Amino acid sequence: MAESKEEDVKLGANKFRETQPLGTAAQTDKDYKEPPPAPLFEPGELTSWSFYRAGIAEFVATFLFLYITILTVMGVKRSDGICKSVGIQGIAWAFGGMIFALVYCTAGISGGHINPAVTFGLFLARKLSLTRALFYMVMQCLGAICGAGVVKGFMKTEYMLHNGGTNSVAPGYTKGDGLGAEIVGTFILVYTVFSATDAKRNARDSHVPILAPLPIGFAVFLVHLATIPITGTGINPARSLGAAIIYNKDDAWNDHWIFWVGPFIGAALAAVYHQIIIRAIPFKSRA
Image (cartoon, rainbow, N blue to C red; front, side, top):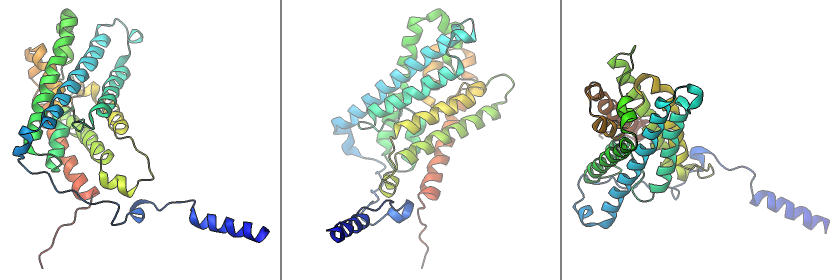
C-alpha cells in the first residue's frame, strides 16, 4: 500500500509540473498564427452594420472621455486652492481612468481606440484598413467636439475664463520642448497599446494574465503626470481639437499643430519599433 502511494506521488509530480516554460520556450507552432494584414481598402466594410456600429462606439467613447476629463480640468482651475480640488494628480487619474473604463467597454466593438494617434499607429501596422482608420478618426473628432461642447454648456463663463481645457506649450518651454513631450508621450501610449493587445504575446506568455485596458489606462495616467506642466498633455489629437474648437480663441490655435504632428510621429515610431524590433519580423534576403 505504501509503495503504491509513493508511485502515485511520483506520477503526480511528473504530470503536474510546478513551473511552466517562459517566453519563447513556451511557444509552439500551435500557439499562434500570424493573421494576414488588413487590406488598404475594404469596400465591403461600407455595407456592413458592424463597421458603422464601431464608428458609433468610437464617437460615444470619445464624447464621454472629453466630457469627464475636461469637466475635471475645469473643476481644478476654478478652485481657489490646491487642497480644495483634486489637483494635477486628479486630472491625470481622470484621463487614465476614463481610458481604462472606455477601452474595456468598447474593445470588443471597435477596438477601443478613442484616439486618432492610436488608430494611425494600428493602421501603419496593418491592423485595420484605411477606410476604417479614416472613419474612426472622423468619429473620434466629432465625439470630442460634442463632449467639450457639453462641458461649455454647463459652465460657459468658467470654460472661457480657464481656456476650455485646451492644450498649449506652457511658459518657459519652447515649441520644440512641447513637440518632444508629445512625441515621447504618445510613443509610450501606443507602444503600450501594441504590447497589451498583441495576440502573439498572449499565446506565447499565456501563463501571464493581462487585462489590456489596465496598462493602457495606466500609461495615460503616467504620461499626464509627467507632461501636464509642459503642454497640458495632448497625446490625443481628437482631445486637443475638440477643446480648441469649442474654446475657439487665438491662444488655442497658436500651438495646435504640435498636438497633431507630435502624436502622429510618436505613434509611427511606436508602430515601427513594435513591429520590427519587438515582434522581430524577419527581413527576407535575396538568394
